Amino acid sequence: MIYLGSDHGGYELKEHIMRYLLKKKNEVEDLGNVEYQPKDDYPDFAFSVAIRVGKEDSPKMRWENRPKGILFCRSSGGMVIAANKVKNVRAVSCSDVKSAEHARRDNDANVIALPGDWLTTKKAEKIIDAFLETEFTKAERHVRRIKRISDYEK
Image 1 (cartoon, helix red, strand yellow):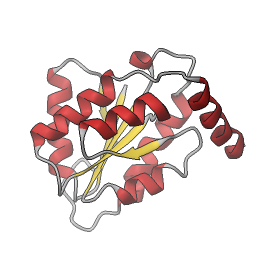
Image 2 (tube, helix red, strand yellow):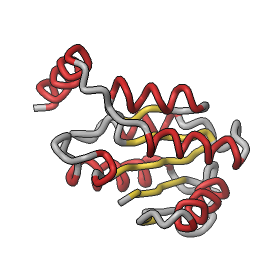
Image 3 (cartoon, helix red, strand yellow):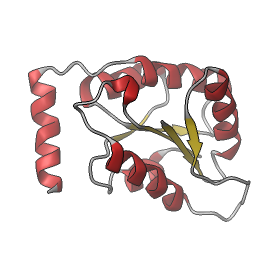
């Protein structure tokens, strides 16, 4: 399942990406905002997505079967700060394909956030594809570092 969330700053991009993902036959759940509201607050949507991903994710699962989160706001910074407060979530802001690939390959990121103000829809699609298609390397140093984060969360 791919969980989507956005505030007003990322609403239009989220709507586009939702249609894009559904067209590609992905399972998608929109956790809001489900309509444009200029005074909404990004933490509400970051927490909704992160809680679902954090509860359902397990590194023992194959990446294709794991829950994933994609957040959208103006800069993506606030969304990432909020999402990373949730246990078992590794959220990264991505503004290009290289950052999405790195987030998956080296950090086993399970949530990404996209800056709605800085991306075209085509560039966002490429970033999403990279996030969904890139496997975690499981290199010892990366596994060790992620374990340190998980241990700290306990």
